[in-house]
Image 1 (cartoon, one colour):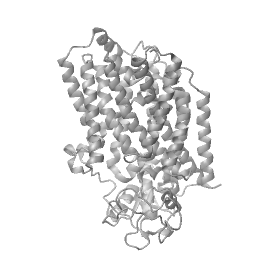
Image 2 (cartoon, rainbow, N blue to C red):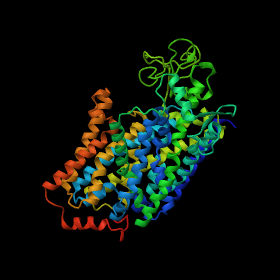
Image 3 (cartoon, rainbow, N blue to C red):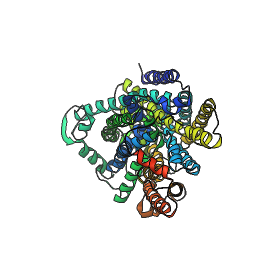
Image 4 (cartoon, rainbow, N blue to C red):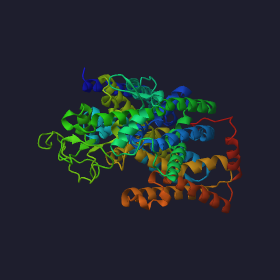
Length: 597
Protein backbone atom coordinates (compact mmCIF):
# COMPACT_ATOMS: atom_id res chain seq x y z
CA UNK A 1 0.00 0.00 0.00
CA UNK A 2 1.53 3.37 -1.01
CA UNK A 3 2.07 6.42 1.21
CA UNK A 4 -0.77 8.43 -0.27
CA UNK A 5 -3.42 5.78 0.32
CA UNK A 6 -2.17 5.12 3.85
CA UNK A 7 -2.25 8.85 4.55
CA UNK A 8 -5.85 9.08 3.43
CA UNK A 9 -6.70 6.14 5.69
CA UNK A 10 -4.89 7.47 8.78
CA UNK A 11 -5.99 11.10 8.44
CA UNK A 12 -9.49 10.18 7.29
CA UNK A 13 -9.84 7.68 10.13
CA UNK A 14 -8.79 10.29 12.68
CA UNK A 15 -11.36 12.75 11.29
CA UNK A 16 -14.11 10.16 11.63
CA UNK A 17 -13.02 9.57 15.24
CA UNK A 18 -13.02 13.28 16.11
CA UNK A 19 -16.36 13.97 14.51
CA UNK A 20 -17.88 10.89 16.15
CA UNK A 21 -16.69 12.10 19.57
CA UNK A 22 -18.08 15.57 18.86
CA UNK A 23 -21.50 14.15 18.06
CA UNK A 24 -21.41 11.88 21.13
CA UNK A 25 -20.44 14.75 23.44
CA UNK A 26 -22.62 17.46 21.89
CA UNK A 27 -23.10 20.41 24.27
CA UNK A 28 -26.66 20.85 25.49
CA UNK A 29 -26.13 23.85 27.80
CA UNK A 30 -23.74 26.72 28.44
CA UNK A 31 -22.29 24.63 31.29
CA UNK A 32 -21.33 21.92 28.77
CA UNK A 33 -20.18 24.48 26.20
CA UNK A 34 -17.91 26.49 28.52
CA UNK A 35 -16.52 23.95 31.05
CA UNK A 36 -17.53 20.50 29.73
CA UNK A 37 -20.02 20.16 32.60
CA UNK A 38 -17.21 20.59 35.18
CA UNK A 39 -16.82 16.83 35.66
CA UNK A 40 -13.85 15.76 33.51
CA UNK A 41 -11.59 13.16 35.27
CA UNK A 42 -8.09 14.52 36.13
CA UNK A 43 -6.17 12.11 33.87
CA UNK A 44 -8.41 12.85 30.88
CA UNK A 45 -8.09 16.55 31.61
CA UNK A 46 -4.30 16.10 31.75
CA UNK A 47 -4.34 14.57 28.26
CA UNK A 48 -6.66 17.29 26.95
CA UNK A 49 -4.47 19.99 28.51
CA UNK A 50 -1.38 18.45 26.93
CA UNK A 51 -3.08 18.39 23.52
CA UNK A 52 -4.23 21.97 24.04
CA UNK A 53 -0.72 22.89 25.02
CA UNK A 54 1.21 20.98 22.33
CA UNK A 55 0.14 23.05 19.41
CA UNK A 56 1.35 23.06 15.83
CA UNK A 57 4.23 25.17 17.14
CA UNK A 58 5.33 22.43 19.54
CA UNK A 59 4.64 19.46 17.30
CA UNK A 60 5.52 20.80 13.87
CA UNK A 61 7.80 23.77 14.35
CA UNK A 62 9.77 23.48 17.59
CA UNK A 63 12.01 20.63 16.47
CA UNK A 64 12.55 22.49 13.18
CA UNK A 65 13.73 25.55 15.05
CA UNK A 66 15.99 23.39 17.22
CA UNK A 67 17.38 21.79 14.06
CA UNK A 68 18.32 25.16 12.57
CA UNK A 69 19.05 27.32 15.62
CA UNK A 70 20.87 24.70 17.71
CA UNK A 71 21.37 25.61 21.35
CA UNK A 72 19.78 29.02 20.78
CA UNK A 73 16.40 27.31 20.35
CA UNK A 74 16.61 26.04 23.93
CA UNK A 75 14.76 29.23 24.90
CA UNK A 76 11.58 27.63 23.53
CA UNK A 77 12.05 24.44 25.54
CA UNK A 78 12.86 26.32 28.75
CA UNK A 79 10.21 28.98 28.30
CA UNK A 80 7.27 26.77 27.40
CA UNK A 81 8.05 24.03 29.92
CA UNK A 82 8.88 26.44 32.75
CA UNK A 83 5.76 28.44 32.01
CA UNK A 84 3.57 25.42 32.35
CA UNK A 85 5.10 24.57 35.74
CA UNK A 86 4.51 28.17 36.83
CA UNK A 87 0.90 28.01 35.70
CA UNK A 88 0.25 24.70 37.43
CA UNK A 89 1.88 25.66 40.73
CA UNK A 90 1.29 29.40 40.98
CA UNK A 91 -2.01 30.22 39.30
CA UNK A 92 -4.25 27.31 38.33
CA UNK A 93 -5.48 26.14 41.77
CA UNK A 94 -6.32 29.70 42.84
CA UNK A 95 -8.11 30.51 39.62
CA UNK A 96 -10.05 27.27 39.93
CA UNK A 97 -11.13 28.19 43.45
CA UNK A 98 -12.20 31.65 42.30
CA UNK A 99 -14.85 29.81 40.27
CA UNK A 100 -14.90 32.01 37.14
CA UNK A 101 -14.30 30.03 34.01
CA UNK A 102 -12.93 32.71 31.68
CA UNK A 103 -10.00 35.03 32.24
CA UNK A 104 -12.07 38.18 31.53
CA UNK A 105 -14.60 36.87 34.06
CA UNK A 106 -11.86 36.63 36.68
CA UNK A 107 -10.53 40.09 35.79
CA UNK A 108 -14.03 41.62 35.83
CA UNK A 109 -14.98 40.14 39.22
CA UNK A 110 -11.61 40.57 40.92
CA UNK A 111 -11.28 44.19 39.83
CA UNK A 112 -15.04 44.89 40.26
CA UNK A 113 -15.19 46.62 36.90
CA UNK A 114 -16.78 46.00 33.52
CA UNK A 115 -14.14 48.27 31.99
CA UNK A 116 -11.45 45.89 33.27
CA UNK A 117 -13.51 42.98 31.89
CA UNK A 118 -13.74 44.69 28.48
CA UNK A 119 -9.99 45.37 28.40
CA UNK A 120 -9.43 41.69 29.23
CA UNK A 121 -11.75 40.67 26.38
CA UNK A 122 -9.71 42.79 23.96
CA UNK A 123 -6.52 41.17 25.28
CA UNK A 124 -8.06 37.69 24.85
CA UNK A 125 -8.96 38.42 21.25
CA UNK A 126 -5.51 39.83 20.45
CA UNK A 127 -3.64 36.96 22.08
CA UNK A 128 -5.90 34.19 20.80
CA UNK A 129 -6.04 35.33 17.19
CA UNK A 130 -2.25 35.75 17.12
CA UNK A 131 -1.87 32.25 18.47
CA UNK A 132 -4.53 30.61 16.33
CA UNK A 133 -2.99 32.04 13.14
CA UNK A 134 0.04 29.82 13.75
CA UNK A 135 -2.19 26.79 14.32
CA UNK A 136 -4.17 27.27 11.12
CA UNK A 137 -0.94 27.78 9.18
CA UNK A 138 0.34 24.51 10.60
CA UNK A 139 -2.86 22.77 9.56
CA UNK A 140 -2.45 24.08 6.03
CA UNK A 141 1.15 22.85 5.82
CA UNK A 142 0.17 19.33 6.87
CA UNK A 143 -2.71 19.10 4.41
CA UNK A 144 -0.63 20.65 1.63
CA UNK A 145 1.96 17.91 1.74
CA UNK A 146 -0.06 14.87 2.64
CA UNK A 147 -3.26 15.57 0.73
CA UNK A 148 -1.31 17.24 -2.13
CA UNK A 149 -3.18 20.52 -2.10
CA UNK A 150 -2.04 24.13 -1.80
CA UNK A 151 -1.39 25.43 1.72
CA UNK A 152 -4.34 27.81 1.40
CA UNK A 153 -6.68 24.94 0.52
CA UNK A 154 -5.28 22.99 3.47
CA UNK A 155 -6.17 25.85 5.81
CA UNK A 156 -9.74 25.85 4.51
CA UNK A 157 -10.05 22.09 5.12
CA UNK A 158 -8.75 22.59 8.66
CA UNK A 159 -11.30 25.36 9.21
CA UNK A 160 -14.13 23.04 8.18
CA UNK A 161 -13.07 20.30 10.60
CA UNK A 162 -12.56 22.65 13.56
CA UNK A 163 -15.82 24.41 12.79
CA UNK A 164 -17.71 21.15 13.08
CA UNK A 165 -16.58 19.90 16.45
CA UNK A 166 -15.85 23.24 18.18
CA UNK A 167 -19.17 24.82 17.26
CA UNK A 168 -21.16 21.65 17.90
CA UNK A 169 -19.55 20.32 21.04
CA UNK A 170 -18.06 23.38 22.76
CA UNK A 171 -15.65 22.58 25.60
CA UNK A 172 -17.26 19.18 26.16
CA UNK A 173 -16.68 18.11 22.57
CA UNK A 174 -13.25 19.71 22.46
CA UNK A 175 -12.11 18.05 25.70
CA UNK A 176 -12.87 14.48 24.68
CA UNK A 177 -11.67 15.10 21.13
CA UNK A 178 -8.40 16.41 22.55
CA UNK A 179 -7.94 13.21 24.56
CA UNK A 180 -8.06 11.25 21.29
CA UNK A 181 -5.86 13.84 19.55
CA UNK A 182 -3.22 13.57 22.27
CA UNK A 183 -3.01 9.80 21.78
CA UNK A 184 -2.62 10.26 18.03
CA UNK A 185 -0.08 13.08 18.14
CA UNK A 186 2.21 11.63 20.80
CA UNK A 187 2.29 8.27 19.02
CA UNK A 188 3.05 10.03 15.73
CA UNK A 189 5.87 12.02 17.30
CA UNK A 190 7.51 9.21 19.28
CA UNK A 191 7.40 6.35 16.77
CA UNK A 192 9.61 8.01 14.08
CA UNK A 193 11.90 9.39 16.79
CA UNK A 194 12.44 5.89 18.22
CA UNK A 195 13.05 4.41 14.76
CA UNK A 196 15.60 7.11 13.88
CA UNK A 197 17.32 6.83 17.25
CA UNK A 198 17.81 3.11 16.74
CA UNK A 199 19.05 3.61 13.16
CA UNK A 200 21.43 6.47 13.91
CA UNK A 201 22.67 5.69 17.44
CA UNK A 202 21.53 2.19 18.37
CA UNK A 203 19.56 3.59 21.33
CA UNK A 204 15.84 2.95 21.71
CA UNK A 205 15.24 6.16 23.66
CA UNK A 206 15.82 9.32 21.59
CA UNK A 207 16.68 11.19 24.79
CA UNK A 208 19.72 8.98 25.39
CA UNK A 209 20.44 8.66 21.68
CA UNK A 210 21.12 12.41 21.56
CA UNK A 211 24.19 11.83 23.73
CA UNK A 212 25.34 8.65 21.98
CA UNK A 213 27.77 7.91 19.16
CA UNK A 214 26.78 7.94 15.50
CA UNK A 215 26.04 4.68 13.67
CA UNK A 216 26.59 4.88 9.90
CA UNK A 217 24.32 3.54 7.16
CA UNK A 218 26.09 0.15 7.26
CA UNK A 219 25.33 -0.22 10.97
CA UNK A 220 28.88 0.42 12.18
CA UNK A 221 29.49 2.51 15.27
CA UNK A 222 31.76 5.35 14.15
CA UNK A 223 32.78 6.23 17.70
CA UNK A 224 31.89 9.90 16.99
CA UNK A 225 29.18 11.47 19.10
CA UNK A 226 26.21 12.48 16.98
CA UNK A 227 26.41 16.10 18.15
CA UNK A 228 30.08 16.20 17.12
CA UNK A 229 29.10 14.64 13.80
CA UNK A 230 26.54 17.41 13.19
CA UNK A 231 28.99 20.10 14.29
CA UNK A 232 31.50 18.78 11.75
CA UNK A 233 28.99 18.70 8.89
CA UNK A 234 27.87 22.25 9.61
CA UNK A 235 31.32 23.81 9.96
CA UNK A 236 32.47 22.13 6.73
CA UNK A 237 29.65 23.99 4.95
CA UNK A 238 30.47 27.32 6.59
CA UNK A 239 27.74 27.32 9.25
CA UNK A 240 28.53 27.90 12.92
CA UNK A 241 28.66 24.71 14.98
CA UNK A 242 25.34 23.36 16.18
CA UNK A 243 26.43 23.49 19.82
CA UNK A 244 27.66 27.11 19.60
CA UNK A 245 24.99 29.37 21.04
CA UNK A 246 25.23 32.78 19.35
CA UNK A 247 22.16 34.53 20.77
CA UNK A 248 22.99 37.45 23.12
CA UNK A 249 22.35 36.60 26.76
CA UNK A 250 19.91 39.45 27.25
CA UNK A 251 17.81 38.13 24.36
CA UNK A 252 17.94 34.58 25.77
CA UNK A 253 16.66 35.89 29.10
CA UNK A 254 13.92 38.08 27.65
CA UNK A 255 12.58 35.48 25.20
CA UNK A 256 12.60 32.74 27.85
CA UNK A 257 10.83 34.98 30.36
CA UNK A 258 8.25 36.11 27.78
CA UNK A 259 7.47 32.51 26.83
CA UNK A 260 7.35 31.43 30.47
CA UNK A 261 5.08 34.20 31.74
CA UNK A 262 3.06 34.19 28.53
CA UNK A 263 2.40 30.51 28.99
CA UNK A 264 1.08 31.13 32.47
CA UNK A 265 -1.26 33.77 31.09
CA UNK A 266 -2.63 31.92 28.08
CA UNK A 267 -6.42 31.86 28.45
CA UNK A 268 -7.05 28.60 26.56
CA UNK A 269 -4.80 26.67 28.98
CA UNK A 270 -6.14 28.36 32.11
CA UNK A 271 -9.73 27.50 31.27
CA UNK A 272 -8.91 23.79 31.27
CA UNK A 273 -8.59 23.82 35.06
CA UNK A 274 -12.26 24.74 35.38
CA UNK A 275 -13.40 21.50 33.76
CA UNK A 276 -12.51 19.29 36.77
CA UNK A 277 -14.78 18.89 39.81
CA UNK A 278 -12.45 20.07 42.62
CA UNK A 279 -9.33 22.17 43.31
CA UNK A 280 -7.48 18.97 44.22
CA UNK A 281 -8.37 17.57 40.79
CA UNK A 282 -6.95 20.73 39.18
CA UNK A 283 -3.59 20.05 40.82
CA UNK A 284 -3.71 16.35 39.87
CA UNK A 285 -4.58 17.06 36.24
CA UNK A 286 -1.73 19.61 36.11
CA UNK A 287 0.68 16.85 37.14
CA UNK A 288 -0.67 14.47 34.51
CA UNK A 289 -0.43 17.17 31.85
CA UNK A 290 3.19 17.89 32.75
CA UNK A 291 4.04 14.20 32.34
CA UNK A 292 2.30 13.98 28.96
CA UNK A 293 3.93 17.21 27.74
CA UNK A 294 7.39 16.05 28.88
CA UNK A 295 7.18 13.01 26.60
CA UNK A 296 7.27 15.27 23.55
CA UNK A 297 9.45 18.07 24.87
CA UNK A 298 12.30 15.81 25.95
CA UNK A 299 12.20 14.09 22.55
CA UNK A 300 12.18 17.24 20.36
CA UNK A 301 15.93 18.06 20.65
CA UNK A 302 16.85 14.57 19.40
CA UNK A 303 14.39 14.87 16.51
CA UNK A 304 15.96 18.19 15.49
CA UNK A 305 19.49 16.78 15.52
CA UNK A 306 18.56 13.59 13.64
CA UNK A 307 16.69 15.56 10.98
CA UNK A 308 19.41 18.16 10.40
CA UNK A 309 22.07 15.47 10.12
CA UNK A 310 20.03 13.45 7.64
CA UNK A 311 19.16 16.50 5.52
CA UNK A 312 22.76 17.59 5.10
CA UNK A 313 23.94 14.06 4.33
CA UNK A 314 21.24 13.44 1.73
CA UNK A 315 21.04 16.87 0.03
CA UNK A 316 24.34 18.76 0.21
CA UNK A 317 26.44 18.55 -2.99
CA UNK A 318 23.99 16.07 -4.51
CA UNK A 319 22.86 16.31 -8.14
CA UNK A 320 19.25 17.52 -8.29
CA UNK A 321 18.14 14.52 -10.28
CA UNK A 322 19.60 12.14 -7.66
CA UNK A 323 17.92 13.71 -4.63
CA UNK A 324 15.68 11.60 -2.38
CA UNK A 325 11.96 11.51 -3.12
CA UNK A 326 10.95 13.63 -0.09
CA UNK A 327 12.79 16.63 -1.57
CA UNK A 328 10.58 16.60 -4.69
CA UNK A 329 7.43 16.02 -2.64
CA UNK A 330 7.95 19.11 -0.49
CA UNK A 331 9.19 21.15 -3.45
CA UNK A 332 5.93 20.28 -5.14
CA UNK A 333 3.91 22.01 -2.41
CA UNK A 334 6.17 25.06 -2.41
CA UNK A 335 7.97 24.53 0.91
CA UNK A 336 11.35 23.76 -0.69
CA UNK A 337 12.93 25.89 -3.40
CA UNK A 338 16.23 25.43 -5.28
CA UNK A 339 18.04 28.09 -7.30
CA UNK A 340 21.06 26.72 -9.22
CA UNK A 341 23.30 29.77 -8.88
CA UNK A 342 26.45 28.22 -10.35
CA UNK A 343 24.68 26.15 -13.04
CA UNK A 344 26.33 22.87 -12.00
CA UNK A 345 23.09 20.93 -11.41
CA UNK A 346 24.05 20.18 -7.80
CA UNK A 347 22.45 21.46 -4.62
CA UNK A 348 24.83 23.57 -2.54
CA UNK A 349 24.00 24.25 1.10
CA UNK A 350 25.53 27.11 3.07
CA UNK A 351 24.83 29.92 5.53
CA UNK A 352 22.47 32.70 4.54
CA UNK A 353 19.29 32.82 2.51
CA UNK A 354 19.57 31.47 -1.04
CA UNK A 355 17.27 34.19 -2.39
CA UNK A 356 15.15 37.06 -1.14
CA UNK A 357 12.04 35.95 0.75
CA UNK A 358 10.19 32.67 0.63
CA UNK A 359 10.21 30.83 -2.71
CA UNK A 360 7.93 32.11 -5.43
CA UNK A 361 7.58 29.89 -8.46
CA UNK A 362 7.06 30.62 -12.13
CA UNK A 363 3.74 28.83 -12.02
CA UNK A 364 1.55 27.08 -9.49
CA UNK A 365 1.43 24.12 -11.86
CA UNK A 366 3.99 21.32 -12.00
CA UNK A 367 4.18 21.32 -15.77
CA UNK A 368 7.07 21.27 -18.21
CA UNK A 369 6.84 24.99 -18.95
CA UNK A 370 7.38 25.98 -15.31
CA UNK A 371 10.22 23.47 -14.77
CA UNK A 372 13.93 24.15 -15.16
CA UNK A 373 16.71 22.25 -16.93
CA UNK A 374 16.80 19.46 -14.34
CA UNK A 375 13.08 19.29 -13.70
CA UNK A 376 13.10 21.62 -10.71
CA UNK A 377 10.39 24.23 -10.12
CA UNK A 378 11.70 27.56 -11.39
CA UNK A 379 12.18 30.02 -8.52
CA UNK A 380 11.59 33.66 -9.49
CA UNK A 381 12.96 35.36 -6.34
CA UNK A 382 16.05 37.61 -6.74
CA UNK A 383 19.16 35.60 -5.75
CA UNK A 384 21.40 36.63 -2.85
CA UNK A 385 25.18 36.98 -3.22
CA UNK A 386 26.19 33.92 -1.16
CA UNK A 387 26.70 30.28 -2.20
CA UNK A 388 23.55 28.94 -0.54
CA UNK A 389 21.14 27.53 -3.15
CA UNK A 390 18.36 25.75 -1.31
CA UNK A 391 15.48 26.94 0.87
CA UNK A 392 13.95 24.34 3.20
CA UNK A 393 11.03 25.59 5.28
CA UNK A 394 11.72 24.87 8.95
CA UNK A 395 8.11 23.91 9.55
CA UNK A 396 8.50 20.73 7.49
CA UNK A 397 11.34 19.22 9.54
CA UNK A 398 9.19 17.06 11.82
CA UNK A 399 6.61 16.19 9.18
CA UNK A 400 9.26 15.17 6.68
CA UNK A 401 11.41 13.37 9.24
CA UNK A 402 10.07 9.85 8.50
CA UNK A 403 10.62 10.37 4.77
CA UNK A 404 14.07 11.87 5.32
CA UNK A 405 15.03 8.90 7.47
CA UNK A 406 13.62 6.42 4.93
CA UNK A 407 11.06 4.98 7.37
CA UNK A 408 8.13 2.76 6.30
CA UNK A 409 5.11 4.29 4.56
CA UNK A 410 2.78 3.72 7.52
CA UNK A 411 5.06 5.85 9.73
CA UNK A 412 4.84 8.70 7.20
CA UNK A 413 1.03 8.42 7.23
CA UNK A 414 0.97 8.29 11.03
CA UNK A 415 3.01 11.50 11.14
CA UNK A 416 0.45 13.20 8.91
CA UNK A 417 -2.36 12.26 11.29
CA UNK A 418 -0.30 13.49 14.25
CA UNK A 419 0.44 16.85 12.65
CA UNK A 420 -3.24 17.38 11.91
CA UNK A 421 -4.18 16.42 15.48
CA UNK A 422 -1.68 18.86 17.01
CA UNK A 423 -2.81 21.82 14.93
CA UNK A 424 -6.53 21.15 15.30
CA UNK A 425 -6.47 20.52 19.06
CA UNK A 426 -5.02 23.90 20.00
CA UNK A 427 -6.97 25.81 17.37
CA UNK A 428 -10.24 24.47 18.79
CA UNK A 429 -9.32 25.50 22.36
CA UNK A 430 -8.41 29.01 21.23
CA UNK A 431 -11.58 29.43 19.22
CA UNK A 432 -13.64 28.43 22.24
CA UNK A 433 -11.87 31.06 24.36
CA UNK A 434 -12.69 33.73 21.77
CA UNK A 435 -16.34 32.68 21.56
CA UNK A 436 -16.64 32.58 25.38
CA UNK A 437 -15.17 36.06 25.70
CA UNK A 438 -17.72 37.45 23.26
CA UNK A 439 -20.86 35.53 24.25
CA UNK A 440 -20.28 35.38 28.01
CA UNK A 441 -18.08 38.32 28.97
CA UNK A 442 -19.44 40.86 26.52
CA UNK A 443 -23.00 39.76 25.74
CA UNK A 444 -24.13 38.04 28.96
CA UNK A 445 -22.19 40.14 31.47
CA UNK A 446 -22.51 43.57 29.88
CA UNK A 447 -24.79 44.02 26.89
CA UNK A 448 -27.75 41.68 27.55
CA UNK A 449 -27.67 40.28 31.11
CA UNK A 450 -31.19 38.80 30.78
CA UNK A 451 -30.31 36.62 27.79
CA UNK A 452 -31.54 33.04 28.16
CA UNK A 453 -29.24 30.05 28.44
CA UNK A 454 -30.34 28.94 24.98
CA UNK A 455 -29.70 32.40 23.51
CA UNK A 456 -26.24 32.58 25.05
CA UNK A 457 -25.40 29.13 23.68
CA UNK A 458 -26.47 30.22 20.19
CA UNK A 459 -24.38 33.39 20.48
CA UNK A 460 -21.36 31.34 21.58
CA UNK A 461 -21.71 29.09 18.52
CA UNK A 462 -22.07 32.05 16.14
CA UNK A 463 -19.02 33.73 17.71
CA UNK A 464 -17.04 30.50 17.31
CA UNK A 465 -18.06 30.27 13.64
CA UNK A 466 -16.96 33.85 12.94
CA UNK A 467 -13.70 33.24 14.81
CA UNK A 468 -13.00 30.20 12.61
CA UNK A 469 -13.30 32.34 9.46
CA UNK A 470 -11.03 35.10 10.82
CA UNK A 471 -8.49 32.54 12.07
CA UNK A 472 -8.47 30.96 8.60
CA UNK A 473 -7.62 34.31 7.03
CA UNK A 474 -4.65 34.75 9.35
CA UNK A 475 -3.62 31.18 8.68
CA UNK A 476 -3.46 31.90 4.95
CA UNK A 477 -1.59 35.19 5.49
CA UNK A 478 0.72 34.56 8.50
CA UNK A 479 3.50 37.01 9.41
CA UNK A 480 6.21 34.35 9.94
CA UNK A 481 7.08 30.77 10.81
CA UNK A 482 4.53 28.93 12.94
CA UNK A 483 6.63 29.01 16.11
CA UNK A 484 7.51 32.68 15.64
CA UNK A 485 3.88 33.66 15.18
CA UNK A 486 3.01 31.75 18.32
CA UNK A 487 5.90 33.41 20.19
CA UNK A 488 4.23 36.78 19.61
CA UNK A 489 1.06 35.49 21.29
CA UNK A 490 3.09 34.52 24.34
CA UNK A 491 4.64 37.98 24.46
CA UNK A 492 1.22 39.64 24.35
CA UNK A 493 -0.11 37.30 27.06
CA UNK A 494 2.94 37.95 29.26
CA UNK A 495 2.49 41.72 29.00
CA UNK A 496 -1.27 41.77 29.52
CA UNK A 497 -2.73 38.83 31.49
CA UNK A 498 0.06 37.43 33.59
CA UNK A 499 0.68 40.47 35.83
CA UNK A 500 -3.06 41.15 36.18
CA UNK A 501 -3.77 37.58 37.27
CA UNK A 502 -0.73 37.31 39.55
CA UNK A 503 -1.42 40.60 41.29
CA UNK A 504 -5.12 39.74 41.45
CA UNK A 505 -4.31 36.65 43.50
CA UNK A 506 -1.38 37.78 45.64
CA UNK A 507 -1.83 41.55 46.10
CA UNK A 508 -5.13 42.42 47.77
CA UNK A 509 -4.26 46.14 47.49
CA UNK A 510 -4.26 45.96 43.67
CA UNK A 511 -7.32 47.85 42.41
CA UNK A 512 -9.14 48.28 39.10
CA UNK A 513 -7.33 51.49 38.16
CA UNK A 514 -3.96 49.78 38.48
CA UNK A 515 -5.08 46.65 36.62
CA UNK A 516 -6.64 48.53 33.71
CA UNK A 517 -3.70 50.90 33.22
CA UNK A 518 -1.22 48.01 33.41
CA UNK A 519 -3.07 45.80 30.91
CA UNK A 520 -3.56 48.63 28.41
CA UNK A 521 0.07 49.75 28.61
CA UNK A 522 1.46 46.21 28.40
CA UNK A 523 -0.67 45.26 25.41
CA UNK A 524 -0.21 48.51 23.45
CA UNK A 525 3.54 48.68 24.06
CA UNK A 526 4.22 45.04 23.15
CA UNK A 527 1.94 45.01 20.11
CA UNK A 528 3.40 48.28 18.78
CA UNK A 529 6.99 47.06 19.17
CA UNK A 530 6.24 43.78 17.40
CA UNK A 531 4.45 45.46 14.51
CA UNK A 532 7.16 48.09 14.05
CA UNK A 533 10.13 45.71 14.20
CA UNK A 534 8.53 42.92 12.14
CA UNK A 535 6.68 44.86 9.44
CA UNK A 536 7.93 48.47 9.26
CA UNK A 537 11.64 48.46 10.09
CA UNK A 538 13.10 44.94 10.23
CA UNK A 539 16.72 46.01 10.86
CA UNK A 540 17.85 44.23 14.10
CA UNK A 541 20.13 47.18 14.93
CA UNK A 542 17.08 49.19 16.04
CA UNK A 543 16.03 46.65 18.70
CA UNK A 544 15.91 48.23 22.15
CA UNK A 545 18.80 46.88 24.23
CA UNK A 546 19.16 44.11 21.63
CA UNK A 547 15.77 42.60 22.55
CA UNK A 548 14.07 40.81 19.65
CA UNK A 549 10.29 41.07 19.01
CA UNK A 550 9.88 37.56 20.45
CA UNK A 551 11.27 38.73 23.81
CA UNK A 552 9.75 42.20 24.09
CA UNK A 553 6.78 40.83 26.06
CA UNK A 554 9.07 40.64 29.10
CA UNK A 555 9.74 44.37 28.96
CA UNK A 556 6.01 44.97 28.44
CA UNK A 557 5.32 42.83 31.50
CA UNK A 558 7.80 44.77 33.65
CA UNK A 559 6.21 48.04 32.56
CA UNK A 560 2.81 46.56 33.43
CA UNK A 561 3.97 45.66 36.95
CA UNK A 562 5.51 49.10 37.59
CA UNK A 563 2.56 51.11 36.28
CA UNK A 564 -0.10 48.91 37.93
CA UNK A 565 1.67 49.08 41.29
CA UNK A 566 2.19 52.85 41.13
CA UNK A 567 -1.38 53.65 40.02
CA UNK A 568 -2.95 51.32 42.59
CA UNK A 569 -1.04 53.00 45.43
CA UNK A 570 -2.13 56.46 44.32
CA UNK A 571 -5.84 55.59 44.06
CA UNK A 572 -8.51 54.18 46.39
CA UNK A 573 -8.09 50.66 47.81
CA UNK A 574 -10.43 47.89 46.60
CA UNK A 575 -13.71 47.36 48.52
CA UNK A 576 -13.41 45.31 51.71
CA UNK A 577 -15.36 42.36 50.28
CA UNK A 578 -12.88 42.13 47.37
CA UNK A 579 -9.92 42.14 49.74
CA UNK A 580 -11.58 39.39 51.80
CA UNK A 581 -12.19 37.43 48.59
CA UNK A 582 -8.50 37.64 47.69
CA UNK A 583 -7.59 36.32 51.14
CA UNK A 584 -10.04 33.41 50.86
CA UNK A 585 -8.86 32.39 47.37
CA UNK A 586 -5.43 31.52 48.74
CA UNK A 587 -6.91 28.97 51.17
CA UNK A 588 -7.03 25.60 49.33
CA UNK A 589 -10.48 24.56 50.53
CA UNK A 590 -14.11 25.34 49.83
CA UNK A 591 -14.07 25.91 46.07
CA UNK A 592 -17.40 26.54 44.43
CA UNK A 593 -18.66 25.20 41.12
CA UNK A 594 -16.77 26.46 38.09
CA UNK A 595 -19.96 26.94 36.14
CA UNK A 596 -21.66 29.17 38.72
CA UNK A 597 -22.32 32.38 36.84
